[in-house]
Image 1 (spheres, rainbow, N blue to C red):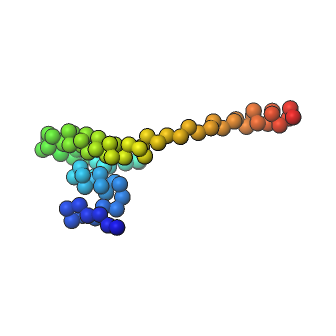
Image 2: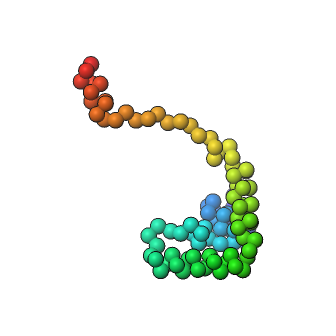
Image 3: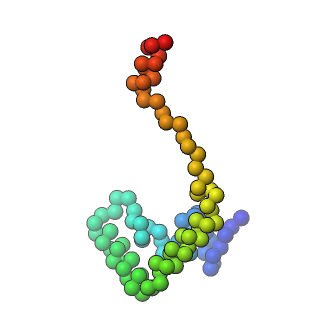
Length: 97
């Protein structure tokens, strides 16, 4: 099944977020390995968007809250994991037996 929002196909969760916000997520979060020049340009663009759309932060919070509300069961389905036993303790237990 394909999902289209305003004529744009959304395939990944990032596509849905980008279409909901109207900007790529990377603009706000950055990307690994970006240079100082790239970071400065990204932050400058983000400042311009915020200056032109003062209600943007409220819209972004609303989108995030809606996503959390809709997907809370999956987001908060936490299963405790067993702690691994350090190798040194495993070796001692085997030697004592």
